[in-house]
Length: 210
Image 1 (spheres, rainbow, N blue to C red):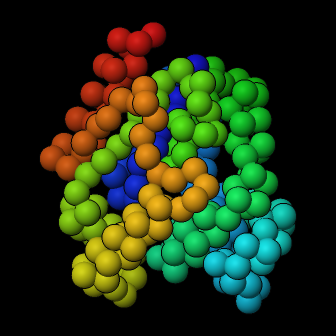
Image 2: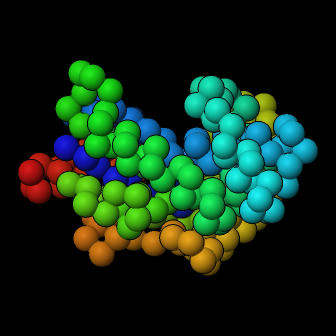
């Protein structure tokens, strides 16, 4: 079984993906980390993620070695990743890796689950199950703000909200595979639901389609 989960930041994609991966014994790939690794490499090597050639140079590095680096979760790396992800050459370079992971998951798994922003529409258009998560910007900002506060990251709610709105606009208006739900995606609004409720709804939806 292959599951695709899409949606903007702060909707709970990662938490849902981890839970479903455990429940169904699926190999998990957070595709956003691939782009965050590219953004991180840009920032640490004096490259401009908004410049396609420089971002492409970063994408050709061994990004897998950075995927478990906690520094990928910072806001500046997230913004750099969003800037790098608009480039066609960068996206094409990372596309094959994502598709190969889904079609040939590591040994011992019963499939794969990928979360990102264009998984159901472009990376895995033939995925067995597609989810698209949404939530209001203010709720997403509050979730992200509390997460950063717990990590002692100096920021404000208003700054986080502005960053989310800026990233949403960039992701939804980019020329290459913009953020949008697949036609056959299951839409889940997580604004007023706990993660436990979202997980339960997701499992019920999967079982109906299996």
